Amino acid sequence: MTSGLLLLNDSLLFVALPLWITQHTEAPAVMVAVITFVNTVMTALGQVWWTRWTKDVTSAARGLLASGVLLAAATLVFAGAHFFGAVAASLLLVLGVIVFTAGENLHSAGSWQVSYDLSPEKGRSKALAVFHLGETTQDVIGPSLVTGLLITAGPVGWLGLAGIFLAAGGGAKAGVRWVLHSRRMGTVASAAGTQ
Image (cartoon, rainbow, N blue to C red):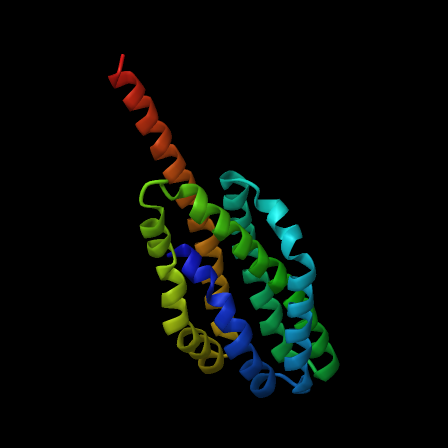
């Protein structure tokens, strides 16, 4: 579930942010193309690099937490673009998409690592299917949720979205730690039972 909430970044980038730029900032409409270009180039050039930050389940959990923090920070920068003229708003949007892309890519790398590392070898396909329900849920309700938050509520909506990202990042890390702890305790109990 927390990964699905972090995946709201997808709806934010492709649905809500273009509407925000054109309806709630003084930035020129061409900034929609600029932020998409910056996001695409950063992702294409850095995709392998981001996976180095999430080599194992522990570092992946830290990556998911960092993802939530970065995505929350980016939402606040995007919100700030509302209060400035065209040039400052455009600069804030570029800065925001740089921070956003870092969070988006850490989420992608971290969630992939966590989903495979924590799924049991037997029944892995079922576990991964359940894990990816968050992605499907985001695809269904994400566009309406972020559009409703950001376009209807204005700058205050960005604060709500920042809170969602922070909570999801923290929840993802806590969830991974809980699973790892439960497995260790199960291993200890199993080992004690065989003695």
